[in-house]
Length: 326
Image (tube, rainbow, N blue to C red):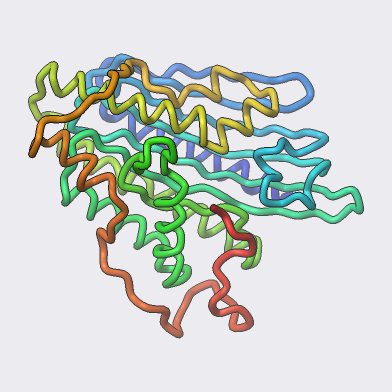
């Protein structure tokens, strides 16, 4: 079994698992599946659930593409890979709930394999997940980050703190000077360990996503809300759109590459609104979102590096990943 086939088998399984967990939240609406192919570059499985009682829109997309040259979004920090042939496959999911007290959640896990002009094969993993609340709850934030930390700690005691920092820096709207949400995990160019160990880590991240999210959905989905809450939700969703269209590397990669637009933009919310110069009421829950929750903070206590660490060779006990990612 090739490395590509091994990863693809897992990603198909992950897509099924995510859809099953989300489908369990809906008694009437079902996922719609589109099997698509794109001439010369590959194809995928796009699954969309819309207009549910709990989920307003959820997309869970698998794609597997190949090309003669990596797009600029993938070579920005690796100019040595410009012009390299490649294959890329991954699963991406974005869930936009109906109730404003349930946060939006995002997951992406991906694998790249590139062949340089000299024949050298280079592979790496990337991914992570983040949470975007509209009305914040401390216990939700703690649960989210504890689950992320648990997934990381079995591989390296520094992974959570490093990849959390990456998420805080990556999921940031520079023009707004604010975070998109409360963060989570973000890693890219992961190949410092063996393929087997890097792949195991990606699986741990992917498999922990619903453990992090579904308990929050269950806890908040029955909270009563008003039209004012919905209006604020649609306003804050505008920030989500801005990030995805201006900064998100996955979106830029897909559009630059000429991929399937419907699948690429499935992450956008179904209802969104921009309000000019909106200022929340003083001491309101809406003000607390930006003044408290959308600030990088430590939601769980992290421990210093220990000598015991699964899956890390003694030759590189502190090496977390091979290439820096903003």
